[in-house]
Image (cartoon, rainbow, N blue to C red):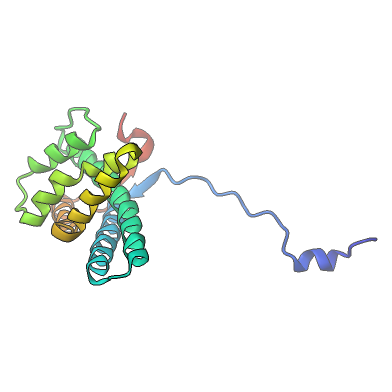
Length: 179
């Protein structure tokens, strides 16, 4: 049995074009991604608190976990870039280094922001320590109830700084960020 070319075309079996990984991003795009993550953290934290449905609450926790991870990575990259731009980068790449570095910028921080910064290290625990998953989930719930709005405050401070220092149109090369 032979297949007609027309039948094959209907199935759209052509291979998808391969896309090259993006390794360069403009600061304004990174800040937009940070804002999207912060808004989702806030939205899903509030939905978690409003809900009495256990499945819905678990879904909210899963989304906040993912967005907290994304938020943390963008946060780290932005702080390192800012330090490099001002010439004060000391070579640290850990989340703890980036949190401490952020605190030296002397931003006016809200209470939620200060608490979230202290608790941001939970991201590492959630990502790497599945043995204590239950404990980390309880801590995540605490964050979702008590300091989730600090994520947008962090974004606002970083955006204001980048705007005031003319960094919004600069580009970050992922490959050279930690080099």
